[in-house]
Length: 430
Length: 183
Figure (cartoon, helix red, strand yellow):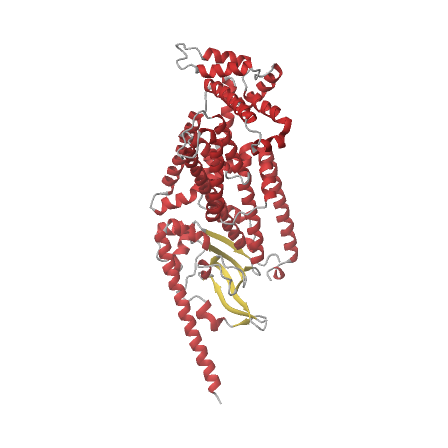
């Protein structure tokens, strides 16, 4: 009705202008995303953190705490959590000496478990299944996995050095580890020269930051800081925003789409906020269940917490998350020396079974209760979209890309579906 | 040609409060202060509400909103002139009211998203400020006292409109009854 009473020439010019403007803005955003992709992830994490913190800020303001103080408290809390978690994780990460010890022990345990497995009763269904799937490739597969962690000649020498008690080395590597290393060496389970070279490259890339010399380490740190410094800025500015961003955006919208645009923005904002907060709650519950479950299996508290955090964070990735939790849990069960199960029917030998039971129980709880109650059906994505999204995210940004692919797809999905719904409700499209 | 029934409907659609004409220099806080819904608010609270106002300029011939669309915002007319129209069952366009500077329209949208019961058609270039339900709800979450004051006043405004509707119905009944009783 409004169109019929408007000058058609002017309407045509407006359409051309807005079309060109939209094209221009979309092109600029695409180019910026492409060239500055290193900044995309810190910005997304800042945005997500702000969304998660928003209800907390409202709660604080409701209790008469000024906005600036509320933001300061939330920011302080955010930094505190990152600091405590970071410190905890760093303290759990082995230093050079512990790494050597750990690698020898993992390799030894893997080989001994493999030997025990191969020598056990031939009628074992799991053995038959593994042999049927991998056949003669089983040993080469194990060797290629082990070649990644096995020690080269220099590292072997270093292991011997670090096993001697000196004034500088007050806590030498245990003789049992040296004995295991020698056993592996005698059996010929050490890297060949060729493998050493390859392995060296892989390990270097695996831990490039730690291996970098002093100056380049500082450069790497500065580069990381310069990108990630954006995260707290985005977090603070989003929380401080009193609607200025929305006002600026709405000023660009023609009157005809004004009411619809704000409704769309608001619906999308609510849906994204509840999805992100729901995912955080769900992941936290999954992480806690993992920790409790693994402690019942007999894992040490530190290991249970670390695996619980990994499994909880990974749970945000549909389908793949539980597999990551399972792999990390089983890997630890494979190398753990002694466990002290709290459940009477579990033993040191059945640690893997215990982990599998924990993963299955947590997944059942998640699928039957946490997911439906906390998230509902708001984020039902087609499995194919999930798989392509997760793969695409991992190609672009590695593990973090994998982690944030689904939240990003959910945001886009919510925005598009809300826009269509509102366009119909406001009689703009059929 | 739209049929004018604005005089008959004035108690329902027109300004049932004292004349609220705004001058061009008035700030958004001054404008809010004159709107009955926000009359109980203190200056600090009016300042908070003024941050969620959106000023829009409409040209003659544009619709601010149309019948049937989901209501999301209330509009306060700063300057200009707007016709409240509705198409009758026979297809005739009826002008229910003519509103101008100081009037507000669509306050029911502050309560829920039910469909607009009439259209707001701009007949003279108009400047209006819009206030959205969703923004107001978010504001109430962090300022429950402010929310309480606004909602109480909103209930009063709606109550007055209801009383005006009753009066209108009684008048119509009298008029219709008298016509029927005439030989």
